[in-house]
Image 1: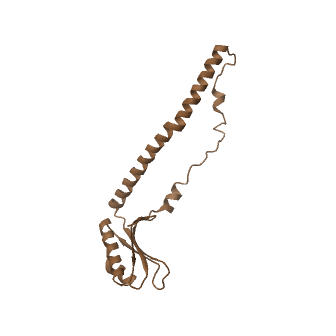
Image 2: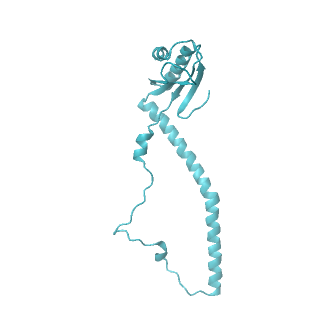
Image 3: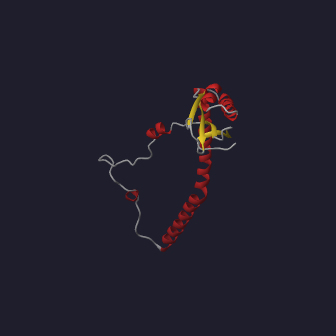
Length: 174
């Protein structure tokens, strides 16, 4: 059993007439619908109600320094740079790794629950591989339920292995 993009389980087979097929249970996400809603970050334009004021304009820095103040300032600047570098190279990647794992886990669980609760059908897809003539290149069968989709995939693969046509295998398996 091998894994393909968008495919959950794949059974590769060869019919008695030497045609190769992949029978898969696919999870077909609706990416086009999601892409329209979440189009990425957009820069917000500054209008008359949002003047272009930088963060340096709000700082009040005294410009008369003593030698002691200068050494303390340099020490604070070095400590700040070291702290920023440690945060950037150690803490932030670790936090992002943990956050990424949590987000992927939550999305995976939510996706499986949504598919089960909303009873969205699984797609059992029969795809011809290799160079062969006749028949459709792809045939899709919609099946409700994960276990039923796996049983349907196995029934179609067994029927094709026994020599049935793609049409007969897909209509007899549902």
